[in-house]
Length: 536
Ligand code: NAD
Image (cartoon, rainbow, N blue to C red; front, side):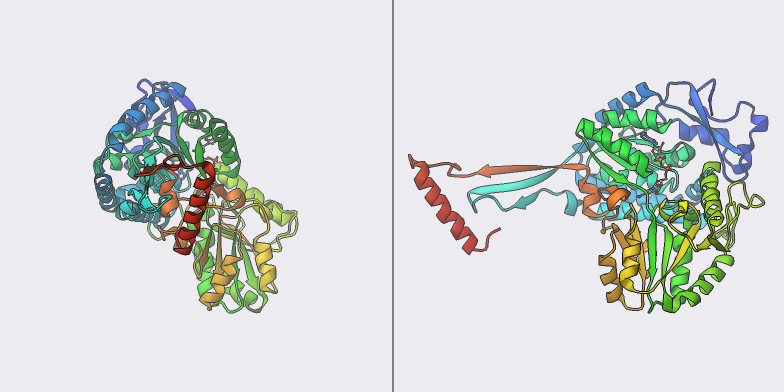
């Protein structure tokens, strides 16, 4: 897909007469104003086209290994000054970003929809999630980053404190499914903690990531603090892993495994937000209509291209038939389309590759005996990559969609007889990202939640309750990842804890010619006393 362009920093087809992007309002100068931010000297460009109608959006300059090195040089230089700024100054920039995101939401949503083909309401949630993230970390900055006094070895004699030192330059490698939120949400705490970032967004959604970077500039972050590089994952992503002080990766489990090995080789830390095969449990006392409404959002938001969306639905015997009726009829009432219109309930998949995977999973299941309750086919009449919301029954372990992530609008329904059985089947498989439990009894829902092996569990909601609770860590157990975004863990991953202890008056050693034996007795008496006094 790469081609030579006369000027690597100016995107767009050579002939403006045939520049169909103009029809989208993405004129060449707009695209060029975004792509200018990429560190690129290769002269190569990558053509980006829209899943809405398939027309080209622009040409994105590509980075080579030397560009990645240059991005790190610039980032390291900027980071030194940034780390010396006050926490309040950094938090203030985040609050300006919060307002800019809300003020510029129409432009952001337009671009997200053109690049990804998703429904407009799904794109809005990206804006909202980023604004929540910016505000949460700005308002809790001191709580997470201030130096903490901790108990010293001996009261009064030992003063101990823990500083949060920025790692340096964080490499962020992100996927295409939430182009705006995935571009920035992990970077916000990294910047607040005093780091610089070298970001490599997915090739399919570079323009949105570049607009996000532009908003950082406008919010007052030093421009060199956030570097953007573009190019194929193994090459450019690999070069980032080779130079970064920490890696934040979001994407597939397969790539996460490769990155974890590379980070281990360099002895640098990483957080990995990976795939899932998320279960929803509808217990026998659930409000069936509320559960059906939640299932529609949980399964079909972002056309199922959502790491925390539901692909397995376990429903209690007692409510199975009523739930299935409600779920199927709500699904059939959804408006499909590939457009900028707010009325679209479910948008397009992003690419032919996604469409192929989804179609293959459904065809394989049907060929092996699964029943399609609704959906089941592509809708080229609505857009090149639109696939109907699809509900399957009778899925078994020999089918591809049983345990593998489809990452599309396809769900398998299973009936269960006891809650123990439901929990056991929900915990089956390699993943452990997100889960959902529907019940009228909140306490019961929370008790079931504790038994599910997933990093987040939502009671009477599919994923939004945990994802929107920024104080609660979010991430995967088992093959769904390592580390957490959000909350204290989401920012502390970008810091080194540095302990400084000052010893006063006496050394931690025998004093005044005391023998080692006497010293041991004195120490033992002191330890006993501290325990009696209830000291930690
Ligand atoms: P992917 O792993 O193919 O690509 C993700 C990113 O990694 C892209 O920027 C890509 O260019 C880059 N990359 C690819 N190979 C690389 C390599 N060898 N070294 C360095 N970088 C490399 O993932 P995808 O298919 O684009 O994204 C979908 C997956 O992401 C799904 O499995 C989904 O569940 C997961 N995801 C997880 C979360 C989460 O928070 N857990 C969020 C969104 C998506």
